[in-house]
Length: 252
Image (tube, rainbow, N blue to C red; front, side):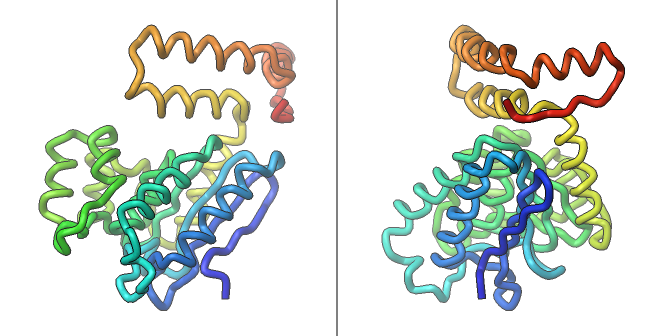
């Protein structure tokens, strides 16, 4: 059985973590398959938006599989390389979070650009309870939510429910579990209404902004915008606006 399912529907790539009997916990096999599917999604020019979710109703991913002996082999180097792979995707990614989203499962959700949560979702990083270090949550949480709240999540190791995650800005929406897939698709449709080249440029600017001065950010903007503004899609977007019709994007 594949530990990660990859489906293509129109312009959307759906990636599903598929170990429901283990609450979709991450062993080395699932991790490798997930990175391979993300690389496939990134290479496929027909796909413009990706959705990551988990099989079943109980868990997006409850974290690392502690029973997998391979997970104790140089875990710090493995996790750093894993995060590099998760965050290398240039296209928009949406996490549809169903149930537990913990530890390295939270890492996967944080690597996405938007997070839609079901009402039964819980978020947290219990790594510290094992005296281990959560790599990406430690790096990324304080850029998404207030620092004090990020430190509370990291220092206590406690889970927070979906409603609280929405209140502090960790997720974009909370919906009933039975509406999660449909709500995610509605979000994806809104994204697909926009120019794919522009969206990728926005993602690069946002992700790099934390490490750049304003002047360096402007130089990066000039480089990215020059390519986007000279594209066929920009001409189509302006023409469609003037003709009062929906644009037909090509990704070129």
